[in-house]
Image 1 (cartoon, rainbow, N blue to C red):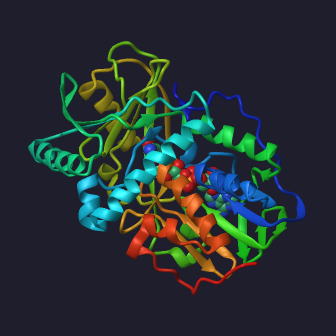
Image 2: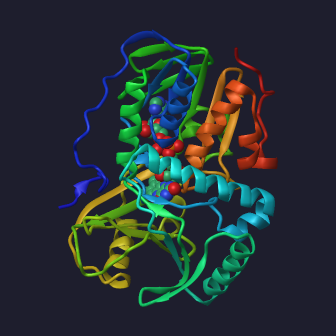
Amino acid sequence: MPVANQPVWDDGSWTTFPPLHGSITTGTCVIGLGGTGLTVVEELLARGEAVVGLDAADVAAGAAGRNGGFLLAGTYDFYHDAVRKHGRDRALAIYHATLVEMQRIAEAAPGNVRFVGSRRIAADDWELADCQAQMAAMQADGLACEWYDAADGVGLSFTTDGAFNPLARCRVLAANAVRGGAQLFSRSPVTAVQNTRVETAQGTVHCNRVIAAIDGRLEQLLPELVGRVRTARLQMLATAPTTEISVPAPMYYRDGHEYWQQLPGGEIALGGFRDLGGAAEWTSSSEPTEPIQRALENFLRIHLGVKAPITHRWAASAGYTETGLPVIEQVRTDVWAVGGYSGTGNVIGALAARAVVAAAFDHDFAPVRVLLGDHWVPDVPVVASA
Ligand SMILES: Cc1cc2nc3c(=O)[nH]c(=O)nc-3n(C[C@H](O)[C@H](O)[C@H](O)COP(=O)(O)OP(=O)(O)OC[C@H]3O[C@@H](n4cnc5c(N)ncnc54)[C@H](O)[C@@H]3O)c2cc1C
């Protein structure tokens, strides 16, 4: 029987942090200890800032530790779509910034990232033509993109992308953060953010500012973002190690709806079919469901031809925005929010983390504008904290 709602990445080696009890005072309170929140913590510690980090469950208990493990350059949109939506200069600037961030992610957790490239496989003639358009746009701008034609499909190959264990990365970041002086608390759901006072189930943090780094369910903590960040459920499964197929690089199919990779141990991790669930997948539940899991299993058995037993089935929440670009903004005088990566937050989330810290501390909005450009619309006038 598959392990209930546990990602294939979890080797059971982690010792959780204690919950926050009582009252504590700090410089910045970071809410959410996924890849984004932990990168925020890393940036704050580099500035000598005192940090308390809180998570409702545990380090990378959300999407950051339960995702496909793809490290892809660029935005949620394919490059030519990003050029059309955001302009060529911004699309190219984001692409370059994500390439740099991928190197930083690799350096932060040595041995975890495999720069094996990635492949977009076309599902039909329309997508084949779209791959041609994407390749033309990328090659015109000097970005690595080649035509791919092999037994496992036809489409595009991107040599600069990679794969990693997302949970292992976050655990390394959390251990580094504690060594650097951060105080991190698990099982401490934030129940209210009253500017510089943050209430958890059993404690209170008094601070100078708050940075909420939550992807899915961000709008539940900060209702200002209702209508701008919408939470969806994404589901995956994984098999026992197999040699039935060889998947040297992360693959995505049908405009990225389905995605799979083979882990170094031979396991296949496969996700997708969110669109099959329709409205039912716009939910903050992170429990796997029978229809989506059945579709994933059929795809595994029929499309990929893998008969290996399924060992893991899991789901997690991700935050979506209208533009496909994240939210990075000051929602209240001393409260900043970052999240909403539309299902591709491993790299953009880390960039957004660095951008929100630069904005909150240096009033330097250049990194925010690289990511968001004209889409950056603060709800309240930006007010400087000391
Ligand atoms: C199945 C799946 C596959 C995906 N595949 C990929 C992929 O291959 N590549 C890619 O780039 N992206 C992928 N994504 C998206 C990516 O995982 C996310 O965008 C990214 O991990 C978000 O990280 P985060 O740290 O911003 O947020 P999260 O991982 O959501 O972390 C937020 C944390 O905040 C905590 N929290 C929530 N509410 C509260 C509260 N009230 N109080 C305290 N703590 C709270 C949660 O417990 C959680 O640990 C995938 C997502 C899913 C769900």
